[in-house]
Image (cartoon, rainbow, N blue to C red; front, side, top):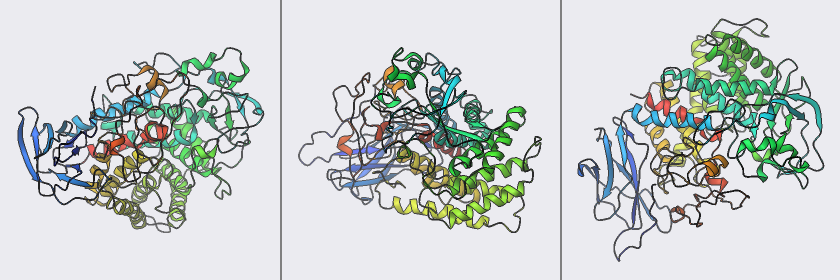
Length: 625
C-alpha cells in the first residue's frame, strides 16, 4: 500500500514542500523534469537526486524562480531539471533544508518504462470485455450479458437531458447479436460513439508500432483486442441493409424502468437480475437502439469513425484474416457513402446527447476518408467495392480537412474523443505523401502541418499559464485523455517534420498525468506508485482491492482533476475511502479538484475513450532516439 501524506504540521519557519515526479520514470537520454511546490519562496535552494541503492547524491541542482502560484497554501511551484542524469537506476529527489522527498522513480530504457504501461493498458481493455469472449482474471470470473446475443432493437425514445423517457420503449421487432464489445466506462453501456474512437486508436497503434502494440510484442500485443473492437462495430452496422445500431443498454429510465446507472453490481448478474420483475426488464434484456431506418443517412461523426475503423481493419488484417478484412473494407465504404454531410441537429452520440455532447464532425470524415484511401492504395482488394480508386477517397479526405481547417471548430480542441483532427491530419499528410502529392487537392501537406502546429501552440500557450506546464486546463473534464492526446500530437508533428520542436512537451505533458502534478498522483491506475484507489468502476470496486495493492484495474485512465466533483451512493457500492477522507484535497488549487472517492465519477471514473490515446503515447515515446 502506498500512503500519500497530507500537509504536515510545520514548525515555525519550516517550509512545507512536496516534490512531484513522473512516477512512471524517465528515459535515460531524454529531458527530465519534476516540480517542488512550497508555501515559501525557495528560489536558489539546492535540490539533489539520490540513488536509492546507495543513498548517495548523484546530481545537484538549484531551484529557479517560481513558475507561479498554485493555491493559497502552495504559492510557489519550482521546476526541477536533471536532464544530465542518465544512469539507469532508482532515485528520489530531495530539497535541502526541507523534509521533502519524492516518491521513488526510475531512469531506464523505453522497454523498462513503457513496456509495463503498455501491458497495463492492454489489461484494462481485456477487463472491459463484454460477452462470452471475456478474459479471465482476478477481476473477471465469468462472461457477461449473454442475452445480448439475441437482443431486441428499438427506435430512439424522446428523453430529457438526464435521459429519462416516458412510458415504454418502442420495439422494432428485429433481434440482433449485440454481444461483445467493451463496457463504455465504470458502467456497462456499450456505444458506437466511444468504441469507434477507441478501435481507431488501437488499430493505429497495432499498424504503426508492431514491436510495441502488435505481433512483435510478447506482453502488449493489441492485435486481438483491436479485432475484438472491430467485430463488435461490424455487429452494430448491418451492412446488407445499411442500418446502424448505436447503443446497447439505457443509462436512465423512469419510475417503472430500472436502468444501468441505477444499479451497482457485477456484469454477470444482469442476465437474471430481478427475476421476473418487469422493472428490471431492460437490465436482463438490454435494448439496442437503431439510429434510423435502413438506408438512412448516418450521423457524420459515427460514419467517419466507423469507416476509419473498418478501413484500418483491412490494412491490419488483410494478410492474416482476409475474410474479415474484406468484410471490413466493404462496410467502411458503404457507411462512409451514407454519411450525412449537412447535419442540422445534434450529432448522434448516446441517449441522452448530454452524456457525450460531441459537436465537431468534419475531422471524423477526414479520418474515415484518409483510411479508406490508404486501404485502397495497399492493393489486394476484395470484389464488390463501390470505389477502388484511392484518389476518390484522398480527394474526400482533403475536402473534409479543408472544411475542418476553415470551419468553426478549427483548433478548438486537441486529440480526444471529441476531436480526432490530431490523428486525421497526420494520417492524411502521410497518405498525400505516399500518393506522390497529387495536384488539385483542397488541402496541402503544409496546411495540415500548420493546423497541427496551431493546435499544439494553443496547448503551449495554455501551458505557459500553468506552473506545472500542462497544456490543458486542470479545471475541466477529460484532463487525462487530453494529456495523452497532446503527447501523441507532439510526437506526430516531430516525426512528420523530422524535428524535435515539441519533444519536451511530448514527454512533459505525459509526465503531468503520470504524477508531475499538484496532487502527486498518476492519473492512470497502476502506472506509478501513487494513483487513485477508489475509482468509480463497479468491477474494480467490488472485486478489486481499494488500497492500491493488486488486483486493481491496471491501465485505466480516469477523468482526472476537474472543476466539479459529485457525490451519490448506489446500493451495493463499497464506500471508498471508508472514512470519507479526502487524501488529495489539500492540494486542490486553480479552481481544480481531484477527489479520490468512488462517488466522484467526474474525477475518478475510467473509460475506454479516456484510455485510448495512452498506448499510442507510450508507443511513440518508445520509438524516440
